[in-house]
Length: 634
Image (cartoon, rainbow, N blue to C red; front, side, top):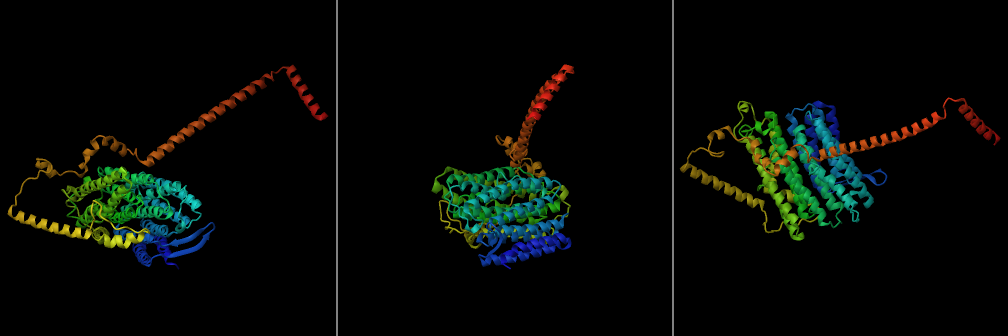
């Protein structure tokens, strides 16, 4: 059997077995994901493998192909699935067999998406993945049905656009074979837009984002770390890169088309992070971090340059690490405390040190602070935008660059809010005597691995992610990151200098502290020491922004869901339904009145002809006799 079958069929069979046998679900899930990971590594090391079997007429073949890009995607998807399975060992789920079954089924189906080389097979796997997403959210909390339906509505619309785009692509290219599609037709714009809708919706960009914050509250935290934070990002970016590098590689795009996509990315960054700034639930803040990552991914890839796509790929790998890490850390806190509301948390760094350091590293990385992986990924995206500006001289590109850099500042601000509110400050009175810890190795090991990888992929950015994963994934030759006015980033040297600087700073501080140690009251919150003792609630961070004009009205409208594309669509459907209903009612009412008038007229005429007089009846009898005589005479 061809090697490409195994990453698909093994998890699917494993998911069916797990569903049938609940008792072996946990261990068997880890075993299946581990075996799949080993096979994924073999495929990644082997290179290009092809499987082609006749299936249906009209060129619909069962065709699989391991591209360099797909090899990287299945490797990271399987790796995250393994970590999620380990993390879930000590988790309590009401529907344990369904949960593990969905994890494994999704892994097999997603690997099918990455390895498909036929558009029909691709969309088949893609749609099944959407259905699994629905059921994965559905097995969550009390309101999970509403959120799952909302996600299905949004993803369903984008998938319909994707399906329509695939049909048009087949019509233009004359084939379903993805390796042979190279559209150069002047009618490329419509299928390009439709395919892009499918990809950016999967990534989680605005306006297809609103189900993610809702799911963060209603879905299980492991599902959030696995699907929206990792798998959906991999799927969306994979498709978007294939759109630019394969399907439409012969098209010389009008720069305005690329600007529109870049605008979507920039808006996703600024809007999601402005909302994250004022959230008071840890999981919701992380959900908006996840949405902002979609903006950076699109902003890099939409430039359609080798450097931009490399930046997008680098940011994708980093996002998979830090967003999954943050969601799993929030899950660890929720398992211990029972809530993720930051007003009910605080001072957990001493009780949960591993979770604290993992969250700190992930938050620093996502904020783009060197030498972590997030900084390197954003560095490439920033450099690419500067190069694009020099080539096209568009002020909008500089605006997008400023928004992206400001987004990093907002990420840092929100990360400070998380670290202070959850781990620093005064511990809550109700938590002082509570038995709180990092719990179990199955909980802290996955988050530790993810946080360590965020460091390694930043410090050794050129040696590991760029050389091993990113450059082999892209068909185009990636030019060296030549200095612009920003200079060239050397993470290894920078890390060494940062460590030396920290050591020198600590030595100087200790030397000064021994000689000139002086204690004094803190004035962090003003000159009233009682305010300091009471602590500063994390929910008050940046609260003044919501009261400032013009943000006041925008935040109020956003809290009511006025800008939610799902709510807008539902309201529009209701409006047009009422409009059509009223039109139909009026039409039939008018038709009824016409029929009623005609009936009344006929009835009146008939009544006048039947007055009850003998002469009238004799008259009609004679008329009938004459008609009958006329017919018989013929």
